[in-house]
Every structure is written in structure tokens, then in C-alpha cells.
Image (cartoon, rainbow, N blue to C red):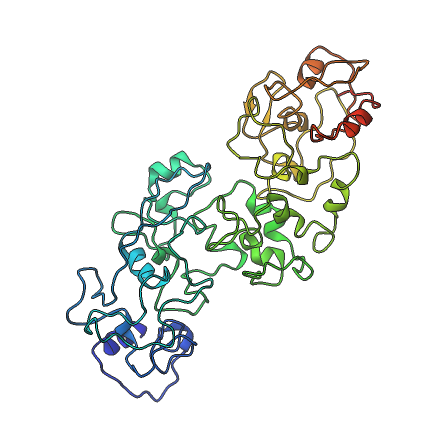
Length: 430
């Protein structure tokens, strides 16, 4: 039905219907209805045609489908991340058409079917600042302009193979991801012109297959989001953590933290936003605020998922020990046996270093996570205080059968020598 309406409107034909038309599943009365009768604050002053802002049956641009809006000729800053295997290029095809309005550089009324000197008069000349104005900086938006093919899914095992992705998310002519892969500009039934609902991360997991997500606390939690720190730019859309899913920590557009599109610039703020007693039952903020702890707030912008534990700068941030896509509610409990405690819920699918000094992508034992910092590495300075056991490399201590019991492990900043001195009062052992 909506396709017929679009064609008729493009031909300037107006019909009167005796049945109600749902404004949500057609461009009519949606946010893309920029006619004078449109529902939003941005609309034409006198123009009554609806489709003319994007399409025209005559004098159209070479781009399909019968494109009518002046195209942007700008160069965009594109998304970059150490964890992406995609080769991201400048926007092309339908993405370029969307950006002709949504980058805020071209007047909304500049259509090709009208003389350049007589644009459609609008209540706002260009897209006003806000979440719909993506600007020329796309580095804080979900990447577009890359090929989604088998080579990409083979390189990144947390990306589904393209042949199993639902056809409801169409790719471009050459298998590229475009704006129109996730958005249908003619149908706003699901909100934000989404092709698949974002509730419970449905649209995200259509392409992303994060290890452990199906059983993760962040995917299944019924905890209400009331009480969490409000994101002033875009509050979470749903009422519980599980319903928001990926949206609890990530923003698809205009993310404050560009790499990995995090809602808050400081990595720890994305965790402590809920784990400060406001949403999650356990107050992590209070625990890491104690004198002896791994307080990630002393470091920021240090951790990187691709870092090498043998050469990285010494640090301890939340995601060094926890995988937010896989955490499950399970207490560590007492450590028994000589092999150490196996990895449980809070530490599932976290990288580590084996007792032989080999990097492992998925740790089996908790000590393997510890050895990323408490093992070999060029960033392991010798302590300036005397010890009964002077060995600071816990991996060598264990392999040499030195009786070490770790009662507390604190990665204090080098400047906080007092905290380091206090740690020396403890006897250490695995």
C-alpha cells in the first residue's frame, strides 16, 4: 500500500480514502513528510506535495530511484576502530542520498525539479543541530560504506555470515552496508524508520554474534533503568536493561566515545552508570573506591581490546577482567585445588596469559586473566620496597612453586606509593 501511495504522490495525484491510513507505516504523516501538512516542526511553508523532497518523475538525478534532492559533495570523516576488520570507505549509493539532508550542509528545499533560485521554502533551511544532523563527521556513527561479505565474517568470528542475515536488512548492489540496510525511509512503524525493532537488541544481533550474549546478564536482565545516570543527548528507549540490550551502553549515532560507539567517553562510566547502586544490585563503585582495589577510574583511554599484554602500558580497567557481552551472575567462591579457580560468570570469555606465557583469547582459569598484568612484560617496574619474596612476576612464582597467596591485588598508579607500601604488608601466594 505504501508503495502505491509513494508513486501516486510522486505523480502529483491525490486520492481520498474512506479508511484510515496508519501514519506509522507510510511516509505520510511521518517525520519524512516535509510537506506543509507534515507533523514535525521542520516542514514546507506552502508546498503540499510529499514525495517531491526526494523524488520526481522528470529531470531527476542519475541516482535511483528518480532522485530529486541536490546531493552533497563533501568529504566525510569516517568511523575507525582497532577492533574492526571492515574496510570502510566514503559513503556511496543510498547512504549518500540520505546524507544530502542529514549531514546538514544542503538546504532541505533544494530540489532538482525546481530552479535553483526558487527552492522550496522551509521552516528550517537546513537540518537543525541534534541527533538527526549527523554532520560531516561520521566517526561517531555506526560504519557504512563497507562490504559485508564472507571475507569479513571469516576475519571476525563475532560477525554472522552474510548468507544467514535476514533479508529484512538489505545490502547494496555490491554487498555494502548502507543507511538503508537498517532504515526504511518510507516506514516508521517501528520508530526511527528501523526495518527491525531494536528492542532486546533484535536488529543488532541480526549481524553481530557476540560470544556469550544469549545468556549474558545484560541481555536478560529485567532490572528497571530508573535511577541510572541520564544520557543528556539520548536517554535509553526502553524500561529495563534487557529490553535496551546493546543500547544500554552503545549509541548508533553521535556516540560520545567514537571507538566502539560508547554512550560515555570514559569507559568506566559506561559500567558505573548502572553498577553504582542505581540499577545493578551490587555496588561496584563502592567496592573499587576502597583503599585496596583495582580502581579503573585511575586510568582512562588506556585499555584496547587488541592490546598486547607483554608490551601494553600497565593499567586495570573494567573490561580487562570482564566481558560485558558475556557476564553472568555467578560468585567466584572459595579457591580450591592446585590448578586455580576456573573462569565463571563474571569473567567469561576474557583474554589472558597462560602459565607458560602464551596469550589466550578465552581464559580457562582466573589466574590467566591476572597474569596479563601480573606476569612478564616490559611495563613491569621493580618495586622500590623490600619484600620477603622479591619476585613480582606471579607467573614465575607459580611455576617455581613459590608459596604465594594473593589476598589483595591492587594496580595502583605509580604516584600512589603509599598504597604500594601498604600492599607489601600482605603475604602473597597463588
